[in-house]
Amino acid sequence: MTTITVYDPAMCCSTGLCGTDVDQKLVDLAADLDWLKAQGVTVRRFGLSREPAEFAANDTIRQIMQESDGDDLPAFLVDGALKAKARYPARAELAEWIGLAEPRPEITEQMREAITQGRTVEESSAKNIRGLAEKFIPEPTKASTCCSPASDTPAAATSFCDGAAKSPPEIEKKNEKAAGCC
Image (tube, rainbow, N blue to C red; front, side, top):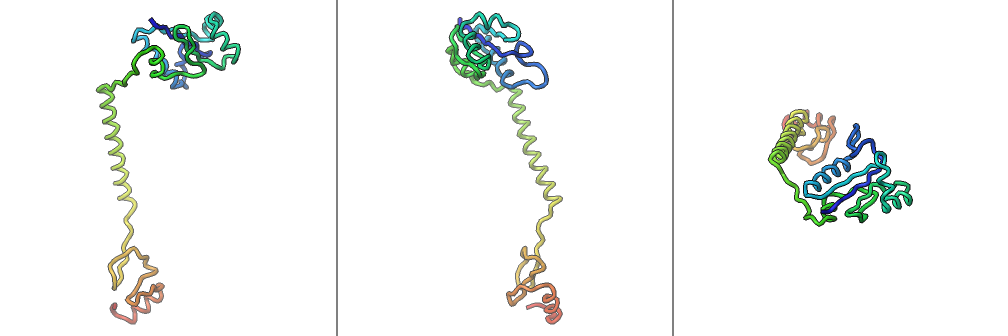
């Protein structure tokens, strides 16, 4: 059976999944390694701070350490052959290394419910925001002129029948002269 060996840089614990600031790549790797184990792959994982002798015992890893002072960790070996260094591979790449078909994500009933709930919350939030906007931000008022239908024209530049825009004092004088309009 295939063996994948992971040589991790110095971390506070065996997986790096402790403390308050957990790196998502380490979370993904832990899940991916568990998935490999479930597929029948032997997974070995060594940490520099916990098992330095394992790093010294492997010629490939020892050479990587000497050339980069450990900056090229993590390193991944499949049946002793180096496959990756200085990065964490995705599950699809791990699967490819050992000849497994790329895993298809499984959508559980709980995931479907979460997706549906998320969509409902999104739609509800948008509807509520539109309602608040309509309540607190009034529509522009329409100014009416005697010769034309209501428009968005500001009251300070109301047009009269002669088509010329008038200022407010001119409008008042014209209104006084013409008891009506047009």
